[in-house]
Length: 61
Image (cartoon, rainbow, N blue to C red; front, side):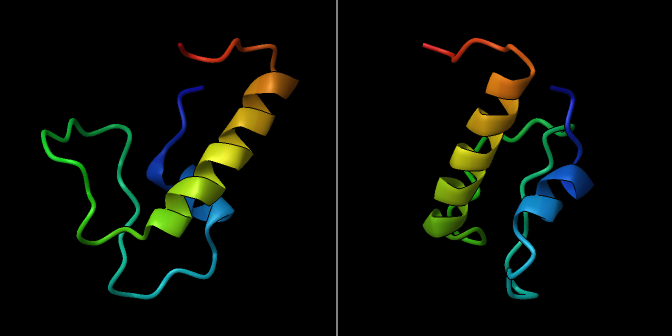
C-alpha cells in the first residue's frame, strides 16, 4: 500500500509525544515495542485491514 509514517499517524491521532510510529520506509531490525503501544498495533491492524480490503489486497498469510 506504500504508506508513509505520516499516513499511519492519521490512524493514531491520540499518541503521546513519547510514543513514536514505526516508519515503514525504514528497515527496523527490532520491533518498536518500547516506544509504541500494543493498543496502537491493534488499531493499525484493524484500520489497515479495512483499507486493504477496500483496495482489493488479499490478507498476508
